[in-house]
Structures are given as structure tokens and as C-alpha cells.
Image (cartoon, rainbow, N blue to C red; front, side):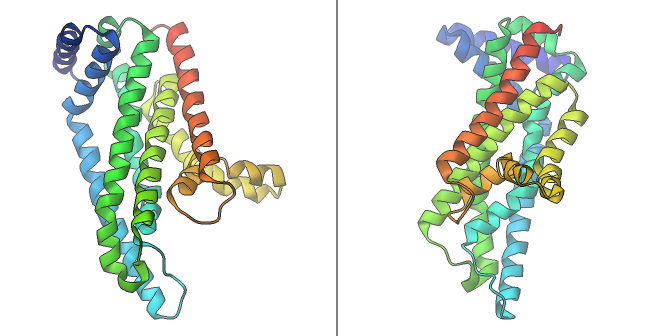
Length: 270
């Protein structure tokens, strides 16, 4: 983020704070202005939409081909979109990553701290913006991807409105909480590369490795990782636990990341 953008967003924050008279609303407005003012945000959204549509169509076509060859591949079309999210979420969490690591890499974190001196308020404002953005994007992806998956899967993608609602809300809340966790992780690591690598390992590598040890406890732990909880929230299918536990699991991941990030943000120099 350039200095010019930082100055512009700081002015935007001050105007918002003056209008509403609330430092919390001002801090949130400040973070929202920064998010939508950066070109990379819109590139991330555009690539995510394209990946969702492409992946949904591909999985739908695969289900159609498999079904007509006698395989049991039928599933509600929104569920194909949820499967696509396993790949697309890696793009979306870049928003949570860059929200804090980008400021450390450019030095604009000093301007941010001057605009919002209370570090706890600053991080919570970022978290609220990231949560809302993740929720909106997740819901939008499912709504846009479902018709594409339905067309390509034909009769093998028949679904009811409840399937769409479950997938949209579950994916939205899941991506929102995941973004908050990544924001906290980025605050701890202060490095975009390290945050992305750690997130990829947690979402993809660790769930595959834990069952290989042949230890029941490790296999059970794999069920409580973020991706597994998002799947439970989004898909109405038999799982290791119900959606209330899945929501609690994701909330704990988000809270843990935010708590660790907040503690280090308050105790370390900018």
C-alpha cells in the first residue's frame, strides 16, 4: 500500500470519525476504506469468482459423466460449489493475510497506528471487516456457482432450496471466521509468505498427515481443523459432529488467532 493511499485512508477515517462521533465506527470505516482502495482486493475477488465458476462447472460435468457411466455421483449442485471452495478459499484468505502483513511490509502500519492508536480496537476493526467480507464472498460464490454446477450436472445435481441456503450460509460464515483466524496469524508472523505457508499447511497438509500416524487421538484431532468444520457447516450430510459444534470449532480457531495476534500486537514494537 502506497503512502498516498495510506494518507488518503487516514483522512477518510478522520472524516468518518468526525461524522459519527464513534471511534469504533471510525476505525471500521478506516479499515473498509483501505480494503476497497487497494487494487489487489478486486483482483482477488475477480480471480475467486472465476475459480468458483470454473470449478463448479468442472465438478458438475464430472458428476454428469460419472453418473451416466453408472457411478453414484449425484449430489445437490450447491455441494459441488462447496467442494470448489477447498481451492478458492486459498485465494480468499489472501485478504486476511494482506490486511496486516501488507502494512508491515510497506511501513504503513505506523500511519495506521497513528490513526487508530488503541491496538486492540485496530485489530478488532480489521477482524470485523474481514469477517464481513468473508461472509459476503462465501455467500456470493455459492449463489453464483450453484446455477453453473446445476447446468453442467443436469439430473445429477438436483437440489432443494434448503441445500442452497445451508451451503451459502455455511460457506459464508466459514470463510468469514477463517479470514479472522488468518488475520490473527498474520499479526503474529508479520510475513505474508509465512502466513500463507502456515495456512496452506493447516488447511490441506495437516488433515492428510494426522491419520497416517495410526493414532486414534490424531485422527480425531484432524476432524476439528478449520476445513472439516466448514464442510460440516455447509453440507447437510452425516459427519463427525453437528453444525453447532462446527460453529464452535471455527469460532475457537478465529478467537485463538485473534487473541495471539492481539497480545503480540500490544507487546511488540510496530
